[in-house]
Length: 349
Image (cartoon, rainbow, N blue to C red; front, top):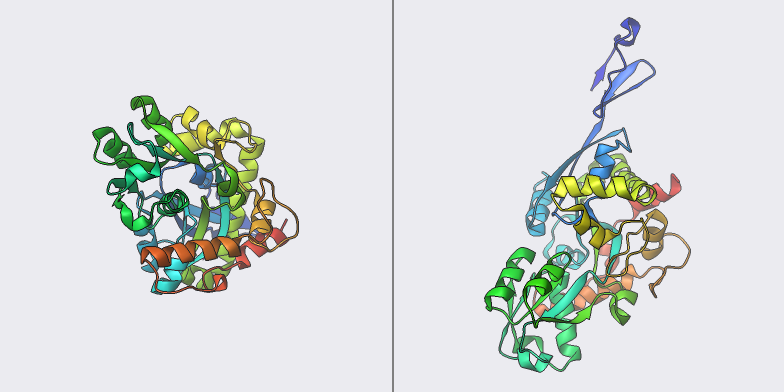
């Protein structure tokens, strides 16, 4: 939409996030619909919006607690972008869902934990018992790998599909014997359940070096194909928000806390208070680190992660979804990943 002749009367440059003025013409900002669930690792979108870091964008952000609801809305053309855990790509390809992973955004560096109920001494004690996970999510894969490494097959336990706050309640109520939780839910459970104990967390060994547990950004195929420039701007906005947070962690954490209704202390528990890597929380990738993980720019990564590791990550999650019966076959990672917005953001630096 264009509005002309206003600048001649001195009224052409309308202030605000939705309109920009250039060469006497006022042009509406590009609206992009974004979703996330209420967790600090996704809160950088709110920084991008509040600080108006990319004025060409009008970010409309919705909190949706069920990521599969977000994926359905993306398929229906009602959402353009969502931030979620990073394992959905192979499922989307297998089921023909028009959604693409466009970047990995942060590995879990201890925020994810496997916790056993009091009286459960080992994986063997879980045979025939119920375990709380988010089915179709990384928590299920984390638990499956841990069980197998400790001599228990996934068909020897019963997985119960719950979201995080429900999982805490299920453990406290005694209806499940083990759970995978991320912070702050893990600490909340441990504080209220004497005798519960952590047997694995995502800062340890292969869990961090493989970056199995982490988050990503998805865009709908329609958005990528029909509005590529808006997709590029959305990628730019996200990583500008990360840069702002790294330089201004106190203000950034306050913005995130207010937006998702967390205490600032809980935000700091997950993403940190100083903009640096937080052991026990997550490592927030900046643009360059994301580019290295996705294999589109040179350079090394810390904590044992490797350049281009998205390929190995994809193969691991695809294989586990096949084992769990959620996909029918293995798919090449390039079928579910689109790198153009990330490349455009890197080229613009």
